[in-house]
Image 1: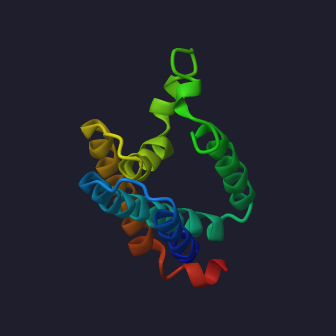
Image 2: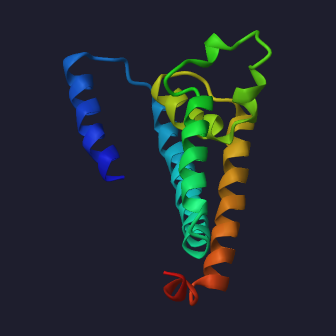
Length: 145
């Protein structure tokens, strides 16, 4: 969040220097960002407890996140895979959906209602898992560390 706040200042300055047409649909990035935060916070709670209990999982999580980063259209566009046999990787990747909930409204592109539904489902599932882990294991975390 702190890094995002610093980058947000740069984005505002860029909007001042190079005017971009602002649309009302850009406000949809706010609920998309809220869904993204719920997923990331819930995932960090659940994975944090898992990594505290089993020390070896931490390196697997780091490697897995790097692998997911390369499968998510962050440094490449999804148009590069459109029409190929690998296009299903984008649709099956929940991080691509969560990224689109924030990125598409900021670029004034339409977001599918299915992506909003999937994002809400991801947020609910991850929040339930995180609350369950926290409720059951919060007293044991001090002993695991």
